[in-house]
Length: 329
Image 1 (tube, rainbow, N blue to C red):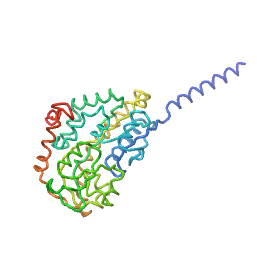
Image 2 (image 1 turned 60 degrees about the horizontal axis):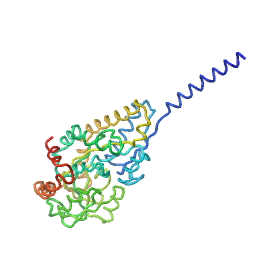
Image 3 (image 1 turned 135 degrees about the horizontal axis):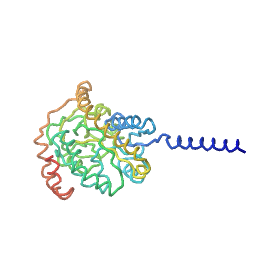
């Protein structure tokens, strides 16, 4: 009987140890984004994934699903809110796809930011923190952090060199489904044509659109230079990439795991800043090799064409005075 009791005790200890092993098993999270694999979105996702694995000692991993394979922008936000997608990585301004985040429309006001450093100051400001906290409280979606810079948005075309807004007259320009980007190109005389990132390359090659709006790194990495041979650096929007998590998945994790997620996002952002300037320089150097002509746009003309549009939206598209507050940071 004593032997049996000892055996039972050993078994109990074994089961206890097994339970500890099970509790420490790897947590695998699914991260979705809409951009093709050869883009800044994918680079940021990989940086975050690698950092998380290192910080967690290999107990947390990320399956990155690019190219809109899990759905378009609206679908990925809906999946994140409803807890059917763990992580959503996207341009910070794209949060406006959720009704509760409409004040972020201001980020698409052309020429709000002077340069990328100005955009970073906004991301690190109390203004941004307050705006994001409002969205989190209303939606439950958890903002993990800023994971990378994006190049300023430019316009590229297949056959027409662009130096003034008049050069865009009547051209079908692919834009994302953002009301301000659409309105901006309408003010410049173009015919904005929203098309998902996954369909962009074929739309350019087939002539469905005459050009597109994007950043230089994604323009080169995504292969869009195959169809567009003119590059106009109008730099009308500066932005960066954010990462969000579904509320249930976040709440199911320990405080330590939540800390790893935040730290991994912050590290990805810092690394992204260090890489940004070199990636921009490399992409510009690649343009000549790809046979792309860089024009010299009349920046004053582009700004003047949208000034009235921006002033007319103050207090309507975003809270009154928000534009001035951010532009003064």
